[in-house]
Length: 115
Image: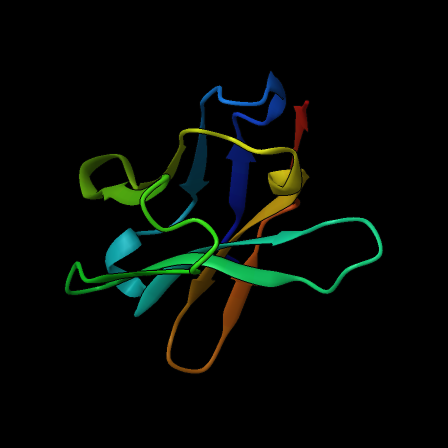
C-alpha cells in the first residue's frame, strides 16, 4: 500500500512563500503522474499542478507564474514551491499520485494566507 505524506503547510502573509513536500512510501517511478490539488472551505477540490513521469508539467491558470511543481526521484518526493501567495490560495493542499489502475491521496496539509 503506497502512502503519501504531505508537509510544509502553515500560515503565511500575502506575498510570502511556502514549499510543500509530498513523500511517497514507494518508488516515484511507479507513478504515471503526480499532482497537487487543493480544497478551500465550501468549494470543490481543484487541480493546482501536475508533473508527468516524463517531466512535463501543467498548472492551473490561477497559479501560473507563481507556483512550481518539481520532484526529486532519489528522495521519492514531490514539491510545490508557492511564491507570491494570495489570500485566495488558502486551502487544504493534497498530494496525488496516479498509477495505471489506481490513484493515491495524502492526508492534506493546510495553507492559510493572511491579508
